[in-house]
Length: 438
Image (cartoon, one colour):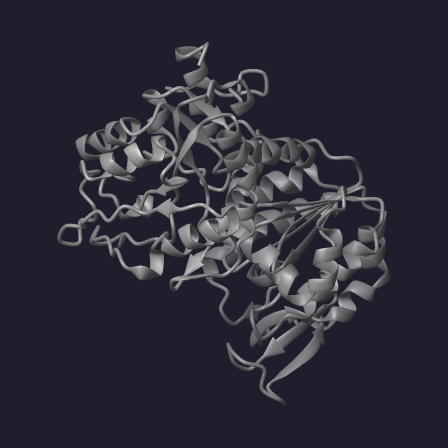
């Protein structure tokens, strides 16, 4: 069992000997949907690590997961263009002005790629001789041995290790302990990349915030956020909810029914309602948008209703957004304006049709010029960029803003109350004991 990591035991890329070494780099470039890069932000954030490796004489082999090509029920793996790394390799070629080779390994009968065959050896030779700038392995989840336990995973891990001399993990967003993030550290000297280090350092600020601390959390399902939500509630001064999470809370508190909210989720939310009767940390958004149907905005098919008018025992349609005037409410505005730390993991409405709540939230938060502002999650960031593009560009270099590359990883670390508690990070620490001198 690999023990908990801490900031003093984490092996850092700046301490690694990279000269003349082939470096296997795990990144989180999970940005392709339908064969198209939706947002290159996660790719761009790893450029510093890649440049540092090359500048110090290392040669790069990259790997990432993309999407969920494995069917959970059948175990079958679909390897097609929709989850290919090809668009990422092409983007890096344009960005770095260097040839990135993607090996073509054959998948077998819906089982995925069985292993790394010897055809890659020629590419590695070219890599060492600087004939190509890097190698980008196929989607790690196309490989049969990436996730399941057993000999096939062990074999895949050994094959990965055989490609390189050093392993660098810069995939903060990939917190699950898979072969390419966890097992690989058993075989190679392993280090945390610069993005991994930066994300962990900023997580520390979320877990040890300047106060008052306000968190904004939303989500499509209540049950998936129970763990981090409970931990956040324990440490915040104020909590603002949105999305289905807020709908569930309203059902539990006011004994109403809202379309799309399950009985199990309402039952689970009653604990939060009970807690808040004493602590009173939850700041209710007073105006919500009810819709007759789940989908596009249809004139006459949606309306704003007031939370104070919710009637016990009544059933309501779909609540698909927060009315923007909620953020002009004095109590809500004062809580956001007085915060010293704000953490946001939230899309407030049903996208892409109901977006007023998210835009109003981001613009209200920006009015607070003194708070640390942390945004976590790909959807949260994408909504910010699309709804407030000018604001987004203006704050990219603002020291008080930080955009995490992995929302799930942030919530996992919050749930565990430890930025060093994720399994891949623990694996790096244990590796340092095995290779103390790199």
